[in-house]
Length: 173
Length: 126
Image (cartoon, helix red, strand yellow):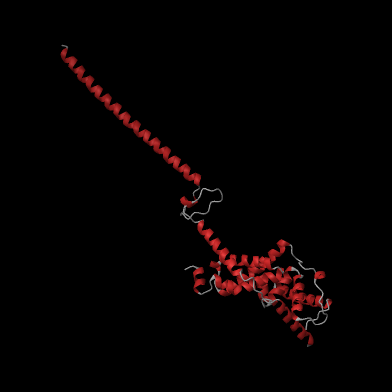
């Protein structure tokens, strides 16, 4: 019996894996690149790659880890290839209409734009921490960097984001 | 502990900002369709050797077991030419051998006839 057959036997077939993980794969690419079309292309590429490598997938948990890792790598590759960073310069970020305490959607959009201005590695670290809720050791494992580096990226990125928000007169409630 | 509360609230805002989003509704259908077309294309490449089109381009791997599947086309042609040539040479050798046997037989006949005539002539002459 092949490994693929064993995966299918446990019900983790390709369609089920795609349904379960499509939002994760797409969102990693989308939050990293801020471009829906490119994010969909990357997500499609990641799932095609999964289909080619189904034989190497041992379990549903392994599939999740594998998909997340490939999505991270492909997003970084796409960012480097297309020289998209920084896609939105800080100067281009719209000033909030009302100063002080903005509505949540506005703060969310402002945060997403500011995250997009972070350098590659800290940006992906922040996305994996707050989108995927991974702890620093998991992020370190996924990105093949030391845990200490992950922690320092997180600390510095949060401080930078707070500072940029404050500079625009936005206070998070 | 205001700073801690602030920190936690800020992290909550980040989580809300980075909530997962769904791709477009036709995403799954597009991926499935691409996978299906790739699988079909891959299956098409596994046709038997003799049903392959002669169109130029990279030759797909043949499912014929080793070594026939790995044998280049020019090598197969050269082997066929060699077999035909050596078969022809063998046939020519065989025909020559048969002809030689016939000549030898004819000479033996002629020799025996000559001997017989010589014996008769000796008998006639005293």
